[in-house]
Image 1 (cartoon, rainbow, N blue to C red):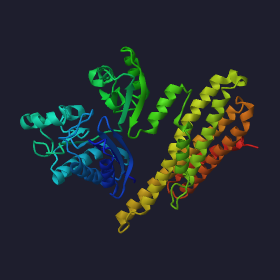
Image 2 (image 1 turned 90 degrees about the vertical axis):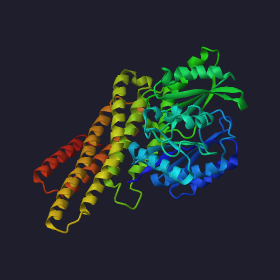
Image 3 (image 1 turned 30 degrees about the vertical axis):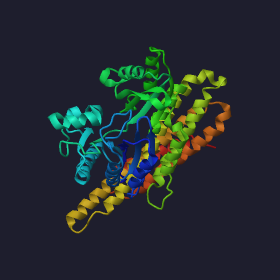
Image 4 (image 1 turned 90 degrees about the horizontal axis):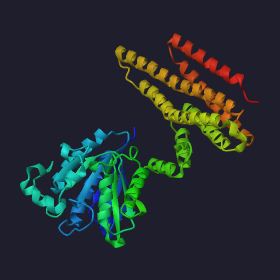
Length: 489
């Protein structure tokens, strides 16, 4: 299974492009690592570089980047608007695919140990990797910044690092390493240079001061642009989305005679976060991510058996065909209810639209489930059969996996037949101009149903449980009869 993580190291250099390029070059040379993005900010004097790839490769790249930053950046000379405690200020690991947050915690702990071992830079752990409750929040760890921490490490036992000696590296300071969910760095710029206004707004919106959950914020002076900025970190953009934060900043700014003049995203942002904002500001009715072209294309590519491998195969393609039928049905229902000629059917069309959206999502998920069920069968056939016990265990596992491989397409067939029937109901209230689209949708639903049924039957041939096979064949016959009863001309 593919294992992917993201790492977003923040370095205390945002003005010298040659140094940032050197950091990127050092990290990108590790095989299996992609540098997806980098941002430089002269006012903050900070750069954010986004890495992705296999966990071990990304971990090594982050370690090497920390070493290169130690060579290039002297914190004794560093000045910038953003809080910082080290040349490599913070190194967060974020799970993406096939890996858990707990896995990222273990990775962060190992990386912290390795940074100290190689470069003698003391390490603090934060967020999910924190070893103490008071170090979960990054602002607590960075309190006092480089200059203040240098003095506190000498005398305050509570400020000792998690890894390494209780003193800063002479030039690189300390590094904070952690594991967390996807964070959106989102800043709102105001039409005033008065940073006190930005600080008041930041206090009003951040969770620690009684504001919005999952929001961390502070006021920053952007001297180069003669603006004040509300600098924001969203630690869970799904629970507290960007548009809600922007609206609250806008409302708070009005109290002080200010208005936002723009906002910015630092680094990368999940597509879902943008979709949520678009849905809110455009006031889209019944918006679904499945309406986004790139999402639909990605679903299509994942469902098509384009590679010379056994999966995804016919079962996945059957689910994909039915999912396309549901998506096309959504289009018909959505456009029909906007037409004056169908005003009497608006409520019913809306019901169909919601149901079709749910079906499209469920069938899209079935694409991967079908592939996984087939992979389970192949894995079972590879089990050892050196003695009678192993042979029996292998046969039992094969039978269980094969039943699973029959159940997934059976569920797809049931959904596709119900979808075929729903699309037929929709025909009586849809706009006349869209009947050809609806016919195509029903043809795709029928194809998905019949393809899924074929996959059920081929798996039933390999199952020894006769009662199980009889019951499933009866279910298949009933589904075929439903299709025949309302067959298309």
